[in-house]
Length: 505
Image (cartoon, rainbow, N blue to C red):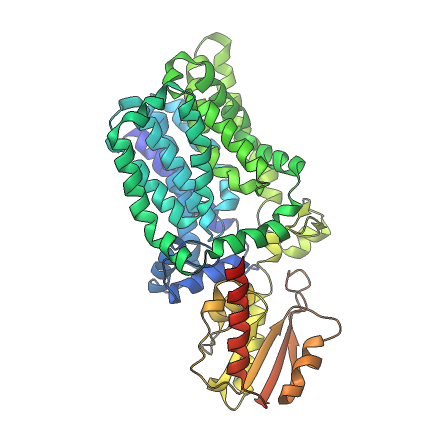
């Protein structure tokens, strides 16, 4: 093994180790992770919440035992592959060993540690963005049209993982049109590659069509409940903080593709950066949607700095650029990861935590979304075990997090459902339900008990989530038994109404 490969192996190994040790055992999985894991039981070419790729990885995790180790392994793997592609990009740009180490360090000690902590489409999304930019650099370097086909496949995988990669295309197209590289548009291979990409994403497009384009409903709901709270100042601040240790390297990368003569053929990367960022700002996107834009500029910046810092006193600046990500990782370690108890984080007021509702809270939303789930599943299991007709019992939850967590942790084989997200399509109405376990977000007046109890012979409050730091704190479990009505008919009506709302959007 060569010295370079040994160093690369060390960075990748360290990446995996950090992803496991930065999460304290006190925390459960995060809300979204449960939904993605449940998709393994319902494989399809699309879902109300995301495209299908995440469900494929979920199915692999299921076959491997569905353990937390494997849940955390895949986002760590995608992060490690992102680092590898940046390393290979630096080699392609003829960067030396210093450039390789600087680039790898900047990618390793960045917001990707936080992003790759969770099993969500975001980690694979960043990998696809980085890989697609790498393929573009390969094409611009060699003008070998085979890279156009590789690009089509990568874009298709990215699209089938998260539609966010469309923004990459929106930012890249005008940059190509304004550059000398627009000659690519007269190559027949370019259009063959487009056709290949379209064929690969066609099953998902057909699924969207067949299901009345739920992505439209999802985006409207997202815009109304979350994107409306996106503040431009916070968005721009986050862009700086995401790669704070490598900010100067990224800025050097942007300058290099604009002014550095050896990178003249890559000049469109300056324009595509500006266009892509402006498009995200225009659509009021969440700040982390943009993360995939940055890793490739770390590669450009690392090579550029390694070349211009080779003379005289400038050599001492090499140490500064290596030290910055290391030093700035220290405060990041203390505030950006769930490596300390919620009690500690709240007591010491670690960090400011703006949630998707636009308000500041005591604890990060991600961390609050990683608490209380085991407790919910355990209490639901206990109540379920007390019922005489368990197989005729439906567990109906308010949201996908509740349903997914119960399904993941349940020891009783419960298959909880919800009218929220993909669970809308996963009801089993072939069972004649007689009992209802209702998991409801906290309501001080217990309206659920008042409204639903007349339809059953008995009704009780079975328990609540007691972890005060959980986002689901005081979520209540109601138990209704011996129905006086046809539960299945009522469920079918509710399902049809929800589907009609999606269709109308």
